[in-house]
Image (cartoon, one colour):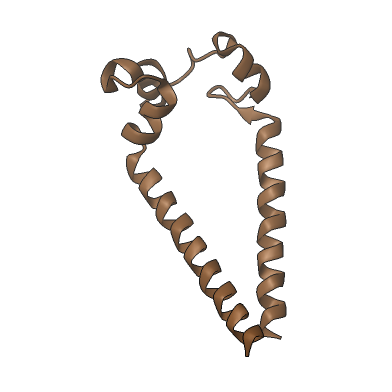
Length: 113
């Protein structure tokens, strides 16, 4: 019964994660609330309007390269401006992977016996 609930929970998380990724990739909101197609943004980044950014978003979008001396804007935002968030997300990912390994290892030991 424990295996069933474990596999059921993992399946539910996988389905929710896939659904969320698909929905997020369809149309992402911009600073002014409009929708933008991610593929179009990737193909033509100059089409992205960033004049409406305010506060910290303005700093991140407009002054990223100058303030961090990074090669590209994504690296600057992820590793400089959002460093603590990235560290936290890495910790959560590491914990999830470790938990999965422990569960699968225990399942394999149970089959060997």
